[in-house]
Image (cartoon, rainbow, N blue to C red; front, top):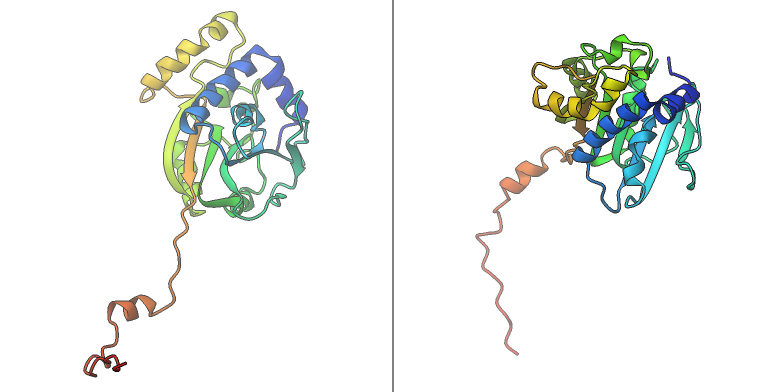
Length: 248
């Protein structure tokens, strides 16, 4: 079940803990995907806190928000790019998206299979998608004081297996939110240090979210027998004499 857009907005934009979470995840997104010109970047669920670095250079940025969640205008003070949509029927042309990021979208979906099929449809050949989901072993999925305490948490192997079943190719994985989900001043002030330490000690420390980057690889099809015919060309005409030019 999707959370209400007002609760998500209040958490990420009006609480210190939400701003800490927003920065920790967004820093990992931009380290994986450097903003570049000419790309279409789309976020689904409540991914708009991660999209701001892409507004200036991208050809197009779109924030898709599912109907059960609700929509809010975004970004503040600029032309709106957020759209209310059906969970499994997005108002996008097939293959139009270069970069797709989902946050608070997959784990709360009541139709994850259809949702992933829609992700595959809109992503262009060679395009990349990034799924941000609660880590079932992390502290954030165990607290209902944050949006990551709702929906189905994942292990990285579960997320990878689900995406592979929908023909996505895993590229890179990362974690974030190593700071405890607490609003106490000490944890908030030391959040950046916890993130740096967590990335160095990720083998023994569980982050609050898993981040898995996948790509869409589409292989060109060949008609039956075409490749074999090219590899073994017919030679029935080789015995004929070569034509000579007629005298002028």
